[in-house]
Figure 1 (tube, rainbow, N blue to C red):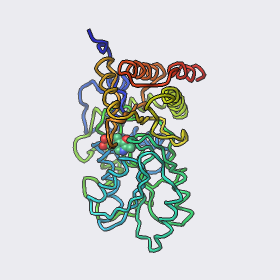
Figure 2: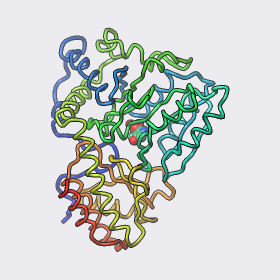
Figure 3: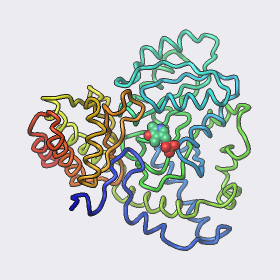
Length: 391
Ligand SMILES: *Cc1c(COP(=O)(O)O)cnc(C)c1O
């Protein structure tokens, strides 16, 4: 007998849980890719993708994962000898910087470690010292999925403006878009990248780059034909030909996902993610009262509402994940980018998740702590239920 039989639950920070309606929208024959329905559907995605990012600027769709959008964003604005400033608060911004280095750019990094957000005072110092304007772009991750830190992107723009630095502000919102509030235009972001498999609840494989006129004008010597965002934002070229075959089924799935999102409303989505995050934190506050567990990010104001990283001590992270998956059918996220990785685990709570799912995650973790004799404080599920009850 196994208690894991039944519907499995993938609670990792991407790919996220997909609505059945999204999967059903994809379960059909391919349409004519040259005219009609698919063309209209693609045209309908553009304003909605801008709405999700809260921008009136441009958006280009790429057939590729988030890494593809990273490279596209860099390639469209930078030249090979340009310098970028990477504000590292976990594995993901470091990875984006490595990609810039791979393209031949010079990378300067301020590394804030794996438990803290961007310290804007250090950014101010660094940019103020750049009198000759060698830094062409500042790369920041809104929510770093490896650490679950949430950075103050609006504050970063204010800091850049304060020192009058002309660099482009480029943000990775792959984990946060559609979960944690993000406002591209109001926050002064020049380039933003995201993917479809996290807050946008669609199978991995399509990603997006939003960019404003300043970013478009920056255009360096790196851009290549396939990654060029200009033809991709020209409906006459792109909707028709997609630089090759359109990702037909992803587009059907994404259309349905966006419909579901707008039916709920962005504000309601952000509020749901916030309450569910507080539910998780309430449980951890109790568990952490005794034993090795603690939330990776201490200050709640700097925690993502989409993913939670937990330190639990080696090898409890791996042991708990294994137990939850094999005994209960719940898959938790690995301690990505951490050392030792088996001292950490992560919970993905992005996109199509609701209260009973989060209570299920927490109840399963509680059972695992008991089964594995990992010391922990009591009352976690009571506390979590209390947060849900208060809404
Ligand atoms: C998931 C993620 C990525 C990478 O996206 P892929 O689709 O796996 O390439 C990059 N940045 C952040 C913040 C992410 O959460």
